[in-house]
Amino acid sequence: MNYVLNALLPICLIIFAGYAFKHAKFPSTDFWPKMDKFTYYVLMPSLLVYELAVAKIDLTYTVNLVLTSLGGIFIILVILILLNMILHFENKAFTSIVQGGIRFNTYVLLALVNAVYGDKGLVLAAIVIAFAIPFINILCIAIFAIYTRDGKFSLRSFFITIIKNPLIGACAIGGLINYSGIDMPIFILKSVSILSHAALPMGLLSVGVGLELKYLRDAKKELVVSTVAKLVLFPLVAYGLSHVFGLAGMSLSIAIIFASMPTATSSHILARELGGDVSLMASITTLETLACVGTLFLIVPLL
Image (cartoon, rainbow, N blue to C red; front, top):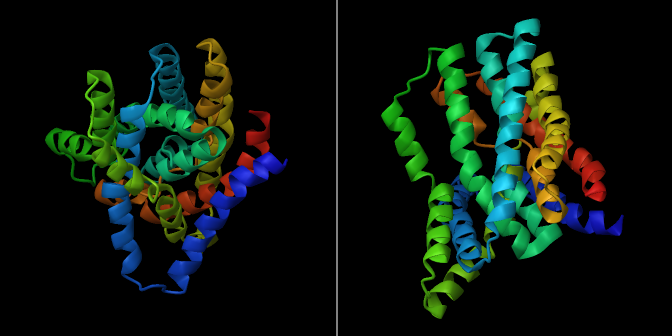
């Protein structure tokens, strides 16, 4: 139990510290949006580039881990679509339910994997991220195209968004350095490594800053369905698929941790741009972030 507490409590405390800082307006109201942008475009990419560049990657286990993760995402999407045929959610609300059910919080994922498995786990998680982000974006945008026509979307802008995503770019750069066998100058690796140390704490503070408890007062059945799909069904599906693909040890654990993550705090951006239910999306994001504290305390000891 001490192992679980030591892994999860620091993450929870940093998240809630971010929430407290925002409400105390410390250091200022406009600081955190700028810091979040700096974390997303500089600190987190530095972490991914460094870890992938210096890692020893076993493609056999990596491929099966990626297939398990992507397969779980697709199965949860299908389950939600079938549920929608029965429960008949309002179209805009359903797009938020889907985002809540299949997206994941990168910062919490990397922080927890690092706490449990260290650098080796970070590498595997980074590879999953590189494939999961574009796959999820394709599925989410397809859902918006089918269920709502209010947003502005073009195929060209979608591909530009994927290409410009700093996390995908960082994974590509780190993987290319690793695969090519290029010997990077030590001073460059050291510089990137120093930057990377700030990525996880700042990312977790940003998660706390993104919490909006006021939206939970408008809780609906949509909120419950999305949260149960993400934090209960997804881990169960991932566990089943892990055995289908023969995962074991650290790879099995990372597949389940990935499936147990709350939805991304950036989900409301897509909801706003493509005509989704923004307030419901904020409610789902907040509830899942808070609820995952409890579900992870149940799941992590079993890994």
